[in-house]
Image (cartoon, rainbow, N blue to C red):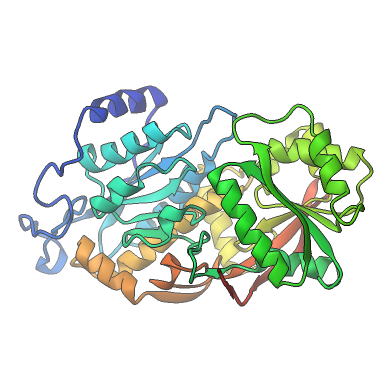
Length: 430
């Protein structure tokens, strides 16, 4: 029942159409709280919500498959498809198959993100959006207004607080009174033989997200016992610097005129390639780390592979190198979704897979009489253990992360687990 992903041309035409629509609900049951006409389902139950029929649940996605910088999260869509295929093979959700429409490409553009959200709700009439993977999540307010359960990576404030938004590994952007995930500082502390007497430099893009990242990680590393010698959101957000020498000079003299023990980049490639290459050429021998470069596709080019060699990458899920049975299942599901072909695994695949997995798990708990109201009620008391992101619980995940993670290091062209997957006690965010 899975439909093929739309071509970009078709998506563009559809987005142009819905851009002319206003935000009003097209009919009385868009919010999913009003009973619609009964449709004969198993056991005589009735469907009562947008996107729910007697035998299916309609779900769509929004993913930055393309972007101006060339960065792509397209594998997120394959990950979601893999999880829905398995759910359907196992009988669906209380007899209903997941009708996954595929993901709309927002091009990492705020206007396209909102247009995609409107299209999925007003034209396609989806019950849920899972996955949503884009830093340009301008459709968040619309989806919340329309009471659309939405699942993605909780690295954006939109996944922290709104009633219908769910981060697959919880809320990673806390507000005061929330908590901070300590995987990164605790893991780096282990690699350096303890944080006491050690220093760390933290660098990010000059953007709202970068500034918030500096604030949170500076607090996290300080709480773990590190001296934070440098913490700046100073790298342009819209263009990769051609010359990193000024940044490198500041970083390497930040620890009382000396280099810090670790440099942590809260950025994505290609920024990390430029920064790490410049640091290595300067003779820096300390620890390098970032949260995004766990992607075999990055190893295809010699320059990229050399720049990332030795770098420790933060993960907030089980590494692909794990022997956990659930990781074995994930790999089998991805292969099946790829038509039986072995494809390089990426963190974006797991983002889509676990977003879909959390949606399916809560929908199962909601029971046969599925509506937005019953789904939300099920989410309020939802919990499970031992997943690829650790122990999950809602509504905790709408305010806090699930607190788990690992570090992997690129060595000789292959990733190795440098700090095994573990759940850490979070700290209060102030």
